[in-house]
Image (cartoon, rainbow, N blue to C red; front, side, top):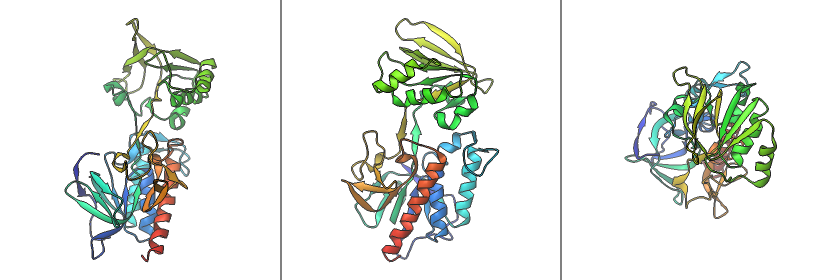
Length: 333
């Protein structure tokens, strides 16, 4: 989240500041979770301010076909789904602004948020800032995201029925992704840059014993092939010990190297786990030294390292919004 001014993108005619310039609620993040929270708080007449963050629309904005979101029997494009949610939130009075959090003070009441040249005070806060997938950073990889390159096996595995694919990584996440993808793919290459693994012994043994998984260790990917065709056609890999370079034909490229939760600005102010995910109780209550932080809630992938689905993000967004409404009622709003 860079130091950038928050510039309104929605009319301020129904701004929710009271006479002291204090908002009832602010939502950090405009993905599935944040927009669901916005819909619910807007319908409760709280006129939420939604800060869109560095990835407006969240990971859905770089997803192609979504076939597992209820209510869309023929599937829906990720950007279309998130845009419809945005319109729905604005219809009920949510205000969306572009902005990037610079600093936050959760010890104060009201809570103070700094977006560079703009500061906001709010009685409640929903942190729905999500988590960003870790990528290798290859130009060819980035060009093919949504066209055979994916960071979510659960989301996209179905599209690779009877295909050959690869998974990048050496931890439990990579093993789980590879094992899951064998339900669809006929062949899964598991590619790891080292000869040793961070994965737990049991997960590693299961993956190694699977007949459809082939391990390529001490191997790095230099290029994902198929940019011109706009679909993954293969990969060019290099063995880091021998220097041998070769190509493998495949149709799917999955990242299993984890996610980065967008919660760094709350370090020291709320409880985070060893990887930076927000530790929550009852899914949406944030804590500090194990005690609930008054008025501060979280939802979506910033606190969910296990499921990371659009529907679970939406569910916790709903829960956080209902808790905000309850909290404000209890405090005389």
